[in-house]
Amino acid sequence: MALFARLRQRFSRRATLPTLGSRRVSPGSRPGDAPHEDALRAELQRDPNNIEAFDALVAMIRRHTAGMDADADPLHAPAEDQDLKKEQADAATWAAAEEFAGHTRAWYPLIELARLSLDDDLEAATRRLATAADRDLTGRALAAGIALLRGADLPVDALGLGVGHWRGTAHVPEVGRQLVLAALDADRIFDARRYCDALHAHPDAQAAAAVLAEVEPLVEAAEQRTAASNS
Image 1 (spheres, rainbow, N blue to C red):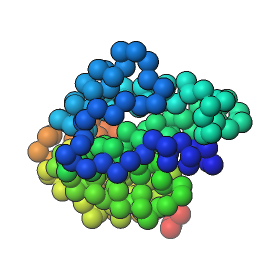
Image 2 (cartoon, rainbow, N blue to C red):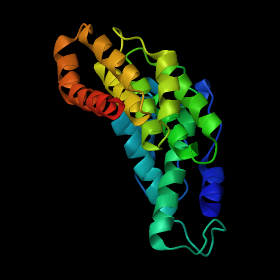
Image 3 (cartoon, one colour):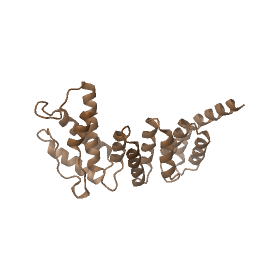
Image 4 (spheres, one colour):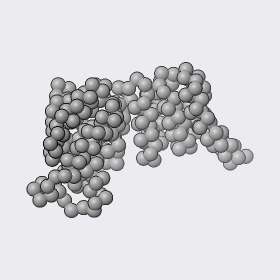
């Protein structure tokens, strides 16, 4: 983690809206990279949640990081290749995410910052996820945040995030799916059933039906196990 911290410090900056998308060529750039970086940053200024553009910028920063002169750059430190590549990828992601997280419509960069900070600072990560959910009216950010917390084996935190931000009929059914799964992960079968019932009333009946086809059998199986254990 020491190398990651140094790389993150090297590439991170506090972005402000007037400078978002402006030219900021990464160290180690190759000839011709500058216009590409300009185009990516301009696109992310227009839509900070363009995942394809974000990933492309991360890949470019990561390549520049990997290509630094090890003898000239004090950030270089001995490490296993696998660990070094992961640290470089994390640092590149942090650099791009921090640059655009200040955009008033940005939610995807906040999800990435939360992912990278989750192990070290759960409170800060949760705040970032809540802000991301507030900025996105579709519910995609909320679904991603719940999934992130579930993946970290934090189903109760995932439910707390979801309950505080879910707008059942306005958000995509994927939010309901993630809530059902989080409730099952937390062994809250009653809550899982309530979320299923809410999905039945979703205006996008086709998408909700696809979600229900996946999660309702899981809820029914959990209910049956609970009934059997209580009998």
